[in-house]
View 1 (spheres, rainbow, N blue to C red):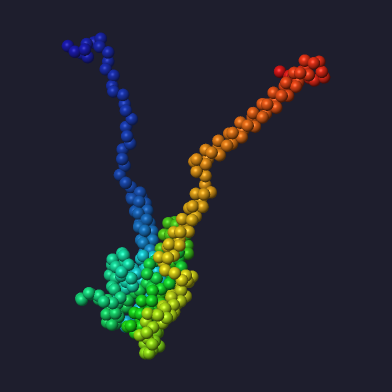
View 2: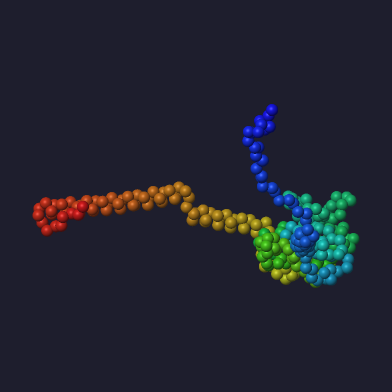
Length: 313
């Protein structure tokens, strides 16, 4: 016979009732619609931002002539060629003016100026077939937002192939958004195509062969860069982007050195604190010596029965 079967056995208490978790309710139609609306709003905002980041405001695209032409554009961001390619309905090829510079020959879809390997196109052959090519006379993106000196190879290409040059200016928006100024300036740039520049006056010049590497190329390049500057609204600076980047690096280095000179080091802070403590100790010692001398004078006056007051305790 078990203890629970005995009549004098205490009654067995039930297990304490633990709090039950609320039962999960099935999603209602209103809640599902709200979640779908939030997801749709987020998707629309993401699509709008992506579309704005990948598109550009195009002006003057009708200035591109039929047939071969050189699109000479300023260089602001690494994605300039992608935006420029999307804004032109015809196929375009990117020309690398400095293939010997380390890293520049690895550009995707970039073709050399001339002298390509057999079976591979170059800028001269592409223009001979009546297509469009894009060149960035500055070479590298501008590190300070200014328009820099152009490479005279663009003028050589225009004179050697006898095709017009269409100046193109990319202007970034001067605004600040949620992503900061750097990200906001990448959204929605303006690409303006100018009137074609005709250099046919130099095609039959008797001194053309003697001036290809001299003043003539530099003058034509300066004319191209001036037209680009009018479209982009940039200030011109007569140096290359690499030189401008070096100047910026040197200026930042000087500013860092000035800040380091003006900002005290830990050793200087400790030395200044030690000097201040020593000055306070010397002043306290002088105060104690003056107080002791005053007390001695008062004690002598009191001992001699003079008029001096008794020192207070």
